[in-house]
Image (cartoon, rainbow, N blue to C red; front, side, top):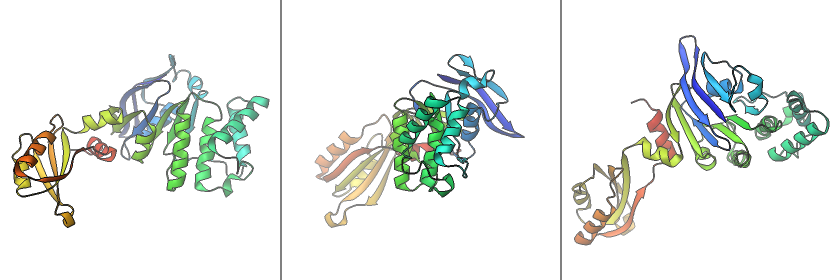
Length: 310
């Protein structure tokens, strides 16, 4: 549906986006991740038509969106990071105004506004001035403005920034519902939201893509090491584990003191399954095993490995 081909953008001597290339298919919910200054917001503004790239192409449904920017803008909803709102308007006035900008009038506009109010959960506040709304409801108004034109593509830049946990959950659920029928590009620093809502993740650093795939694929690509956890009771455990083939390092932690268990973490290459060898050692040395499992790497660890300069 949407393809960026070698998009670049500089501000003075600072290159914010550096020949960025990726495609988005219909119905995908994509997490767009990167550290501060990586170029996420600049890329989203370029797609939304707020900024023009220095070079590169954007193709939307087979058309050059840079030559005909309205063809994309008409079918795109955008919630910027700072969520600019007309605070002197009522919620319904703001949505009617946005719908009119999308060329809607009469019954079509009325229906679109009512649908956006329902999807964004604004039924209780639709007649109130935006200036009187809480941060959570302001974000909902921004989301409603993004979807009122029934766009095919939605771009959300930090949609849950500054919200409390309950508000984050509500906005996340809304994005998940929208993702069932829309294509969504979502930028956020809350990595749990990505794991719970996104079918694919694109990670950028210094304006370039460093990873593109599902969360599981990123976990396998991020590091060649795997962690296996052993919680056991017995003698000579650490020394024995360190001698096992494939074990690069053993880290020891205090375990359950009441039952005299200790916790050990074994680092091995990702393609090595050390659990059978550990179990055999336990039988041979008569250890009591309380825990033996491979520990999955968190998305936060994956993100750090991909974005911190070595």
